[in-house]
Length: 102
Image 1: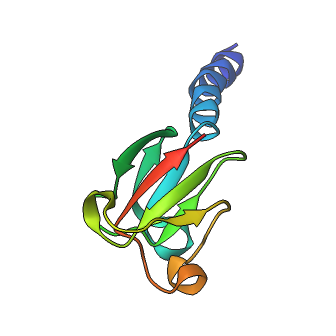
Image 2: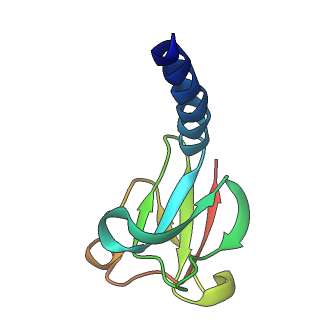
């Protein structure tokens, strides 16, 4: 009985977390999806990580991000349509801000 209660409690906690992460992009401060990060829900708002730099991006299918080398989404955007474990490798340098759209 206790095991069944534990199992149902675990599922109640895990399922919403999976749904949340599958609807948003993750912007990470370090390469390979590590370090402080923020989620983008695809509304197009300008965001950055708590560290002020974006080194890796994990996108859900159908989402794209416009990356910027300046804070506050200034200058020309760099489009990103797939996950990037290292923006240094993929675009030559980390980004400072991003706008993600579904």
